[in-house]
Structure formats: C-alpha cells, structure tokens
Amino acid sequence: MEIKEITGDQPVSGEFLIVENQLRTAKNGSCYLALRIADKTGEIAAKVWDADEATYRKLGVGQVIRLHNVQPKIYKDQIQLEWEAKKTDFFTVLPETKVDYGKFLPQAPGNLAEYWDYLVKTIAEIEEPSLKKLLRVFFDDQEFVDRFVKVPAALKRHHAYIGGLLEHTAGVTAVCKAAAAYYPMVNKDLLLTGAILHDIGKTRTYKMERGFDGTDPGKLLGHLILGVNMVERAIAELFGKPAEDTGDPLLMSLVHLLVSHHGIMEWGSPVEPLTLEACILHHADNMDAQITKFLAIIRNRSRDEDWAVFDPGLGRSIYLKGLNERPERDDLSEGA
Image (cartoon, rainbow, N blue to C red; front, top):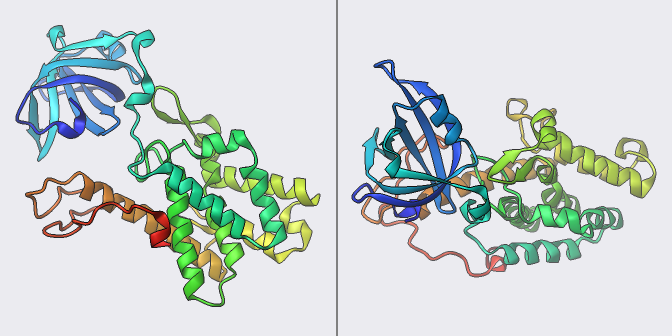
C-alpha cells in the first residue's frame, strides 16, 4: 500500500522510509516516538507508544520499515498511524542491503524530459554573447547537469521531490518568457538567463542519499550565496575578473537578479529588486512556488470534498468544488 492510498478505513501494510524521528514525553509521563514516514507518493505521521532510547535508535531517520496491518487513526482531522513499541509484529526494520532508497523518494509529477527540453531550447534562444557563454559554462558541464535535473528545489515547502529544481526552473522561466513577450522594455536575454540560473546554488545545497537532506555548505551558506558564488566564479573564468570589475552593466545586473530574487530582506534577499528584470524574476519565482503548493493540494484531493484540509504551508484551506478538473498539461510549449 502507498501513502496516497491510506484512507483510514483499512489497516496499512507496506514499506516506508523514516524521514523524521523525535523521542517525546506524553502527558502521562511515558515516552513515545513521533515519526514521519514517506514513500514516493507522500508522507504521513506515525506514533510509536511506550518507546525508549533503544526503539528511538532502532527506528532512526533513513531506516526503512515494513508495516504489518497497522490501523490508521484520525488526529486533528489528519490521518496518522499508531502502534505500540512492544508489539514488534506490527513492524520490521529492513536491512540496508535489501533497500532501494530511490523508490521511496517523491518524484516530480510532470515530465522531466519535457522540462529539460524546454530549458535547452530557451538557452538556444539567448542572443547576447556574454550571457550565452555563461550559460554554456554550466549546461555543458555534465556533472552539474546530473545534479540540476535530480535535486529538489526545497526540502519541504515546494518542489520537494526528485526533479523539483528542474521543474521549478522551467516554470519560472516560462513565466518570465511570457512577461518579456508582454512588456516591451524588458531585457529578455537578461531576464531569461536570470530565471535559468537563479536557483543553481541548490545543486550544492541539497543531497539525496537515504532521503533529502542539506549539505554542509547548504546549511552554512544557503543556496542564494552558493549560487552567486558559482556565477561569479564562472564570470571570472570567462572574463578574467568578477562581474563588478568588468564594467559590464549586463553582468552586474545578472548577479543582482540572483542576489535579489527572494524579493525582500525578510525573505532572505540581501537587497531588494532594483531593476525591472529583477522585479519580474522575484514575482515569477514566488508565483511558481505558490502555484505548486496549490497544485499539490488539488492533485491529492478527495473528489467529494468542497474544501481542502487546512494547509500550514499556505496558512489556509482552498476551495475545490467543481474546479480544476482539467487534465495535466501535455506540452510545456502550450503554456509558454
């Protein structure tokens, strides 16, 4: 049974990856484990009652467990799984040698080959020589490409699945391309290059092993700083000096797009957008992230519900009745 199939009406059996594990104390003084377990279709909370340190170590993050007829329960309108630690017939911890961890990681719902082809075609459309050379530094590097097409765009909030960065980058690029076509004063080559490169630091921020996790540089510096450093090194490699020393306003503006794409300082931007292209990129970035949150709720909805369950990431529940019945897009070019 996959997580998306769990309804609360029947016992759960299946194999799941432990992605969170906390040893807590209940109101009665006993200890329990608060887990989150996952497969490629989603995550669900699980409680293991009357647990101890040995159980905590046994059911560690990254372990895969096989559940046997665990009865789901409803807690605060959410389905969760519960069992007692001493009833070991409910679960088995699988040895690492028998686990294919890739099958437990969530996958992008869209067609990754389609997103990749779209970005390749967009890069081919860039006419400004310095920007095209810069893009080629990254996208002619197979090691970079291998990570770019696989890593998530986040660990939790949006595009938190294999191919998430690629999907998010394609989405942001498509929105920016539409804006450049509508607003005639936009520097299209600059905007599209910024869209394609804005989150490349995430290739060094996240790693995929037993699950998704942050790298040491990602945790210490963050994807924005890592991405700017990557672009600055590429500029220095191509032009012999960093962007601010080239005297080229285009290259400095490109770095500004990366530095400012979070929009406001409270969201992590060292500076706010100060160019038209930076303004568009920020809103395209946020728009794609927010839309993806809505789409995740719509895809996982029950057909008979008018309103989705409250989503903490959005801070609200969304209206569903009679809406969003169209199939998934067949071709990215149709919307770009």
